[in-house]
Image 1 (cartoon, rainbow, N blue to C red):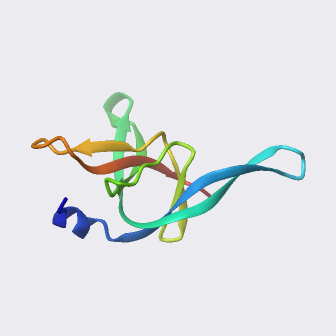
Image 2 (image 1 turned 90 degrees about the vertical axis):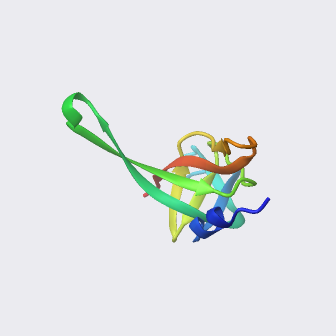
Length: 113
């Protein structure tokens, strides 16, 4: 499938991190371990969602746009421009209106600090 517009938008290098196992910290608590899985190109965008009466509360939401062939679930992470992000749920496929094929995937993320 040709996707020239999508390819022009997905320009930021990123690495998908998959949860591989669970280690144990110094106190005996389980700690997940992530390993680099695949290098891709993405688009990371910031959205602002207003909540509460009159928009008194403001929440920043980040969305990563992925190529259609990349599937991610809530256990995965992504590293974009050297910063690690955790997923807010599974990646969602976005289909074209004309033929119903998956055009790209979107996933909401939070910065890991």
